[in-house]
Amino acid sequence: MNAGFQLLPTTHPLPAAEREEILAAPGFGRFFTDHMASATWTKEGGWHDFRVTALEPISLHPGSAVLHYAQEIFEGLKAFRHDDGSIWLFRPDLNARRFVNSARRLALPVLSEELFVESVEALVRADEAWVPPHEGGRSLYLRPFMFGSEAFLGVRPAAQVTYGVIASPAASYFSSGLSGVTLWVSENYARAGKGGTGAAKCGGNYASSLAAQVEAQENGCDQVLYLSDDEERYLEESGTMNLFLVTADGELVTPGLGTILDGVTRDSVLELAAEHGLKPAQRQVSLAQLREGCASGEITELFASGTAAVITPILGFKGREYEQSVGGGIPGEVTTNLRNHILNIQYGQAPDTRNWLRRVI
Ligand SMILES: *Cc1c(COP(=O)(O)O)cnc(C)c1O
Figure (tube, rainbow, N blue to C red):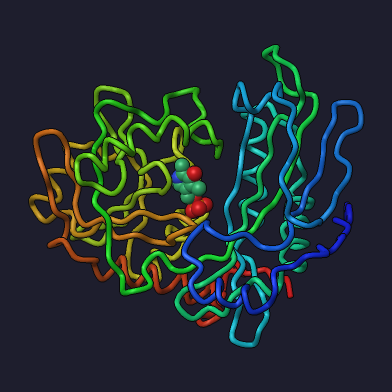
């Protein structure tokens, strides 16, 4: 089905000179483009009102479901400009499928994978001028989201739901050379448990992660390393990124799915492993194994993966009574090579042998 996200162009686009100034140094998540895509769902009428309009505030009744019971999900993907000016998405089908799965978990209506991709493409076309050239690792970050907008204070799935896509130009997280982060091993907080929402991309998971993030920063670390809530204390993820470790005998290990997010970057890294002479493995790794492995040199590199920063080296981690550096505290070779490989595919500078790119313009 092609709904036709109808474009009603803004009457007040940002002047080109101001846009160019923003695109020269966009940072991350600070500036927004001229347009947004939107659609509405009601229990009686299904999905309707597919539009691309001027970006504007959403007016909500104070009784709207999302404001009280956090019935909300989102996605994150990027549009990349190639040297010839063309614009491409990276594996948007996986984001579309994950959005369906998140919607089911949060009892939100399903937006078809076709409509999801169509909405993202329609916004990219409307805001084409906001996709920066790729120098400096720049791209246009796209943020689809959906929430219960019905005004009703009872606890049940909302009968009216709002869908939107907004876009924000993004610079590389590492514009001045690849650096890395340190992780705080959280003992006080868990991000997910069996049967919870750990595998869904929902705002509620992030709301409950903020206290742990503050604790990490108070302890001099950049981000949180979450563990499973059982006795074994298995590695889960960092809360916004999936985790990988590289072993001295050439394994690339990441925790298996279940209570963690099924990352698009995670999947891409696993797919590319063999081309880098690595044996991919999905299995549980306990905190004790991580600490011993990094101390003995059996684990040589640790990194995190996610759309925003692609691959982030992890240079060390810290808990209440210990501190451990990884691989000498500098970004490792495998980490750097995998990162460059994914970026080169995204920017059309390495062969896209798996058809991961989808052309928009
Ligand atoms: C989005 C997200 C990731 C990374 O997924 P990508 O598809 O690679 O961007 C990892 N963990 C959580 C909790 C996330 O929300």
